Structures are given as structure tokens and as C-alpha cells.
Length: 202
Image (cartoon, rainbow, N blue to C red; front, side):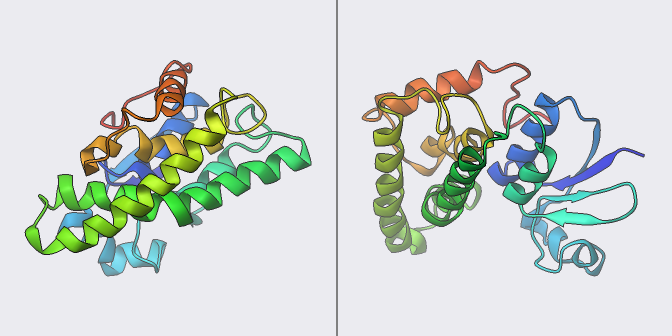
């Protein structure tokens, strides 16, 4: 058996894991879970993740690991995508926490409202708040990247993958990256990494 990845193709969180698996050339079977149809809330899926969210990585022995950043951390132990230096590893965690607390709730959620839900008018006030906080996160990233090529230790790590996933499609949530030249250059560097795949690739 190979690893099974339960995911929803448009999701940036799910994309992170597909990208890591592909770049590390780890074989896996993808199982589509359409969250817009409630497929992550079925009794069968809730046995794999009681939180009812994707992605979930299922191992050959039936164990399941949810949460994209936890999955990436697990997969990249003793690889070039996770530093061996203790302080650098902590810095990677710093950016993974930043992504989930200060970035994803605003940039990813805006994209979901605009591009997946079709930007319904009742979300106008919610989007305005998320835009403000999303741009605040982008400003932090822009400042950090102004004098370095990647987020940690001047090399590509899962810190970059975590933040790249939703930043490179931020325009789908009506974020304008034209005033963030360091982020734009960093996006190009991430896209030039070996075995990079687009978010739409299965």
C-alpha cells in the first residue's frame, strides 16, 4: 500500500501536502473529498479526522494524521525541506504558526468567499475585515523577504511551502500583490523549485 491523501483540490492547505509529497517523490494515492458537498462531515470521514477537515494523510497501518502543517513536518524529517539545526527548525515552526494564525484565516478565507462561494453580498463586511488583516500579514512577509531569498536560513523549506500555498492565489480573494515586490520575487523562486506542481494538479 501507499500513503493515502484525503483532500479537496482547490484547497491551499491540501496543496501544501501534495506539493511536499511530489517534491520528495513519495508515492501516494489521492482521495477527493468535496467539502462543498459535506463529504468531510460523513461518519466515515469523521473516523479519520473528528474535526471534519482535510487534508488527512492515512498510513499503511490505518493511522491518520490531519492538519497540513503537521503532515508537512512529519514528511520532511531528515530531508532538505526541514533544517536539522535546532534554532532553524524553531524558526520554521514560527512561520508555520504565523501562517495558520495571522495569514490563512484572512487570505485563504477571503479566497474561499470570493472564488468558491461566489462573493455573496452578505459577506461584504466580513471581507473588509479580512482584507485589512490579510494585508497586515503580507506586510510582515514583505519586510522579512526584503533582504533574503526564503523565510528560514536562506533556503527553501516547508516554511515557504506553507506561506506560498495561499499567497500565490491571493488574487483569487481580491488581494493585490503589485505593491509587494519582495513577495512577488519570492513566489517566482518557489515556483522554480524542482518538481513544483500547480495547485490544480492532481
